[in-house]
Image 1 (cartoon, rainbow, N blue to C red):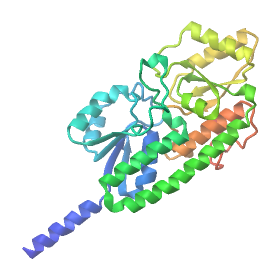
Image 2 (image 1 turned 90 degrees about the vertical axis):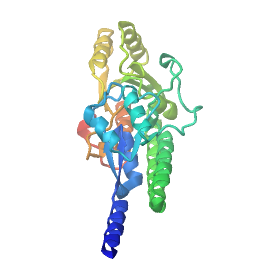
Image 3 (image 1 turned 45 degrees about the vertical axis):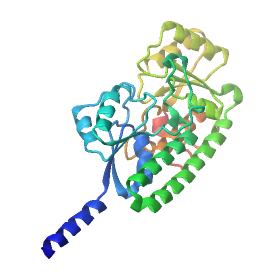
Image 4 (image 1 turned 30 degrees about the vertical axis):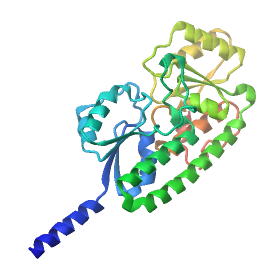
Length: 314
């Protein structure tokens, strides 16, 4: 009997010490969750580099992965529209399912007309807003695993300082772009929070969701803007086809104005896992550095920490 009780106590302590399982929808959420949880949890991300969350449909494997999670974090604000039913089913089964944007004040959120009363979900484009998401994740981890509160809090403190440094770098880098050149034209409207935060005029060929289609009139209006404001560069995105950007370039050429592709930006997904661009900080560093350099700023192409891949910017 004593041996049984000893083995039971031993196995229980081992189980409680084992990392618990967190499943996230996007890489941006997975990265900040890993920064706060560290070795206390195994973090699994459903959507990999280059995947468009607007169009993503969960597979059977995804459903099984969600059902095995201890905690599920998703963006919310309709970013993962086609996953809604799966997330609801998992929550109804008793899993802890949280939208990381839940604590962002509604007064901060943008309401584009095309979304019919819904909010723009691309809040991670503003590091200040993503810090709020990180704090929300911290709160949920503390409530789930109070024994490691001190470590989670210290991890959040360190990461918050890194995000503050990123925010300062972005401000300085983008402020060095000549004011008349602060126009960001991309494949779809993923950068509106970025534009508001850093005082850029942002124009997307498609709307907030990549499910929307760009028409000939949309292309013509942007070509007119490019010519009138003498814009030198437009940008492609890692998760969106560049055919509409190519149409802009051809249209501008026909109007007697030369505009180039300033680089590839990360919008709805980060870079390849295991690379600097495959982290949230690396993603924003890449976008800021690429945009600023293409629009006239004199910056180190290796970015804030000297870690950027110059090849991705070409």
